[in-house]
Amino acid sequence: MSHCHNSLSHMDIPEGARKIVLVGNPNVGKSVFFNALTGMYVDVSNFPGTTVDISHGRYKQDVVIDTPGVYGISSFNDEEIVARDVILSADLILNVVDAVHLERDLFLTLQVIDTGIPTIVAINMMDEAAAQGIKVDLDLLEHLLGVPVISTVAVKGKGLDEVKNRLFEARTGLIEPELKSKLQGMLNRIGSWGEALLVLEGDPHVAERHGIPAGDMREEIYHARRHRVNDIVDHVVKETQEGTTFGTKLGRYMLRPWTGIPIFALVLYAMYYLIGVIVAQDIVGFTEETVMQGMYEPAVRDLIGRFVSEESVLGIILIGEFGVLTMTVTYILGLLLPLVVGFYFALSIMEDSGYLPRLATLVDRAMISIGLNGRAIIPLILGFGCVTMATITTRILGTKRERTIATAVLGLAIPCSAQLGVIAGMLAGIGGKYIAIYVGVILLVLGITGKILNKVLPGQSSDLLIDLPPIRLPRGENVLKKTVTKSYAFLLEASPLFMLGALIISVLQVTGLLEAIQAALAPVTEGMLKLPRETATAFIMGLIRRDFGAAGLSDMDLTAAQTLVSLVTITLFVPCVATVIVMFKERGSKEGGLIWLSSWVFAFIIGAIVAAFVM
Image 1: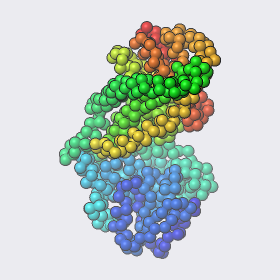
Image 2 (image 1 turned 30 degrees about the horizontal axis):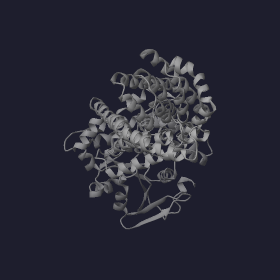
Image 3 (image 1 turned 180 degrees about the horizontal axis):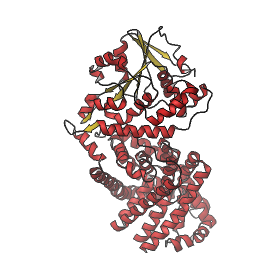
Image 4 (image 1 turned 180 degrees about the vertical axis):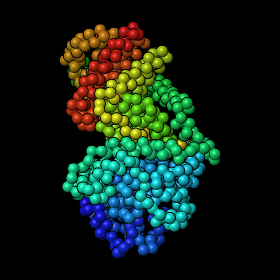
């Protein structure tokens, strides 16, 4: 990438023309401002060294340049690199901000102001903010930022003339004194305020231009900037009920603890009733018992039995107690698939309605206590669908320590959808007292694990930055598409592993090793957990997939107390093979191995404590 001050050399910029650069997050309406300023005289060119197109045009004697929509100028991708270089070459910046999402957009505004380039801010979509009962004190915002702030509704042309009239009132804004002092200390080495900022923030490209090492202050600067944004928003934004829709009011109720927690409890109960009662008892009762065990298995046994004796080694493997063609297919299609479909149906409704981001905001404070922020609720909830996928989505978390904590919690205390469905069905049959103990134990383990890791791991939680889409009725087409897509992905991933698990169990049974393992594990299963010796088979199944192990428990004759102990243990048990592979890939062999081994120890110790308490 060429030096930022020469990076616009491919554009036709007349001598003496000022470069007016448009900056903003994605979808804030910059293109309307660009068109209003440039009219018909627009050119689009490819930015050197990238695939990013840049629009530029004339405004009077000056040049207006549009930048890609970005959330920051930090060299994380081509769009940010281009935005960074164009911004650093600007004579003045017109920053377009979405009035509805000030908390999100002002982070970029402050980063732009911190570059020391004269700036003017247009607060756009003020009509949408008013419709949602959001009032913004623009005079106070102008005072706190130190730059001109103008109210606009760009698509209706409101405020655009004022932007044009005040464009050259743009000025350098207020920078935090501590950061300002650090930047002044860099100026003798770099000479450009904006580039000094990016070197401090650890931008490798800018540091390389000046032949100096990149700074290591990104996290510290970002943290301070996020706190400043939160403080500004607290002072300038007021919410009213005047003229707001029911959806807006409901969305606000979801965010406030006194109303949000009861709504969350209601959502959880609805999910439990759908998955644990309707699906796990009624639908699975039909698909597993009537269809698979009553019709499919006898037909397969009859067909295979014509060619292979059921007592032979091959017969045991194919159609025996743990048969690849009998029990495995029954578990996948008759038991687990309906539960997975039920869970993803509920999750898709939560996503499409706009509830999930509000849940993240609601639980943010509680999450901070275990070293995470509210955004972590997204991988944790996804973990109830598939822990493997959720482990990958921990990448959305801001710091390495947060990703480590979330991965450990997912691997230890979050049951995936199929396992959760089996658990919900089994819990529904043992009464409210045991359900309360189960939920309490799992939440306690989750909290203690997070607390310990929060104390032990260096660093601190990043702040929550998340979009809050409008609350709306879920679209049936979207919900159906997400449910089908994710359920199909479950079938593709789980089926081969289930077949492998059934094959391993059958081989162990044929060779007599299954009984030997059951005997070897007896001090744990019978001694510590006070469960029948045969539950060792379910734990062996659980090594392949935890839901496979849970399904094995569902076929056993256990008392209510034994059911509770076995479900707590299998929930905390080691993650499935697919999750372990992803965990090792994402967190490395040392960290991943430690999480994996810890889940073994925790599962049996906590199971033993519960057994001592209830038996």
